[in-house]
Length: 376
Ligand code: GMT
Image 1 (cartoon, rainbow, N blue to C red):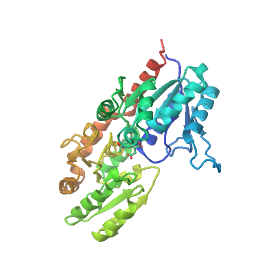
Image 2: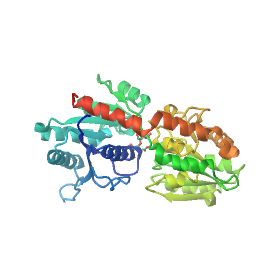
Image 3: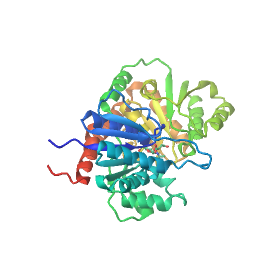
Image 4: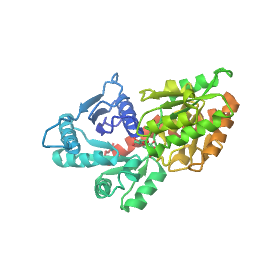
């Protein structure tokens, strides 16, 4: 039996795949008996406070007249070092390269006596958007190079990172995961739901341009010409207003439920029959995996890491970026077959066999022990 680990996890606490993944990882590791400290500027939404071995540590953010921009990375680094000392942490696991990996590397230097190991998980936009911004390019590169271990959430992201940053270091692929047992409750409801109820399409995102919310509205309006369905939109963000206007212009606004930001998406996935994810880019698509695990087939664009999750024609459909007619036809085909569609089962099975949390978390724990050079 290996010794239990003491790990600090830092992530964005807001809605977004990286924060969700980091928090669920922390909760599951804590349930396995490891000592987990979550460090962020506010408690992540999916933090399970019923778990004993997990603690939350808030990074203070206070205004000071001299500082027009609060130096959050420095406050985070100090907090990471403080928590690491108090809890004698062995590992700092940063989810998203900036600022978390950079702050973790600073904390490692602040508390050299702990011999902390920094593990960085790359989630996508930290590499593809933010990390390539000229202002962050060199610091992201340094964070990847100096981390003791580095993981990417898909093979696509690993290749992108390698080809763009040209850093000679090992990057392990550890896929995102879902709690299959929890999601299977919704999956079973799907199999048994009434054939005659009104069907719903769902889209869940942070409504940033990369998610192509306008395409969601356009696809929905094409579908509505042939089928009486509703659209459930979950999330909020910069494209919300333009999407509302487009929905009015296309006369589909009265069929759309704007649900805003919600903590638990499963009850909404329980009402959905197909998910639209026409993103311009997606390093993995955790939300697609959650949908599949609930028995909701996904129609997505063939970009980034999505083909590693959605197997076209087997458990979902992929179309070329921006091809809204094809996406609408795919969604119609799924909706017309109702709960008899084979993707419902195939998606659930694929999620269970490839992305179950037990398997994936074991890959993280193996990496942790390897990085601290733990000998049994
Ligand atoms: O999708 C987002 O905009 C949020 C972003 C994040 O960092 O929270 O998501 C990224 O990480 C997720 C978890 O690994 C992936 O499932 C998403 O595909 C990825 N988003 C993009 O690549 C756009």
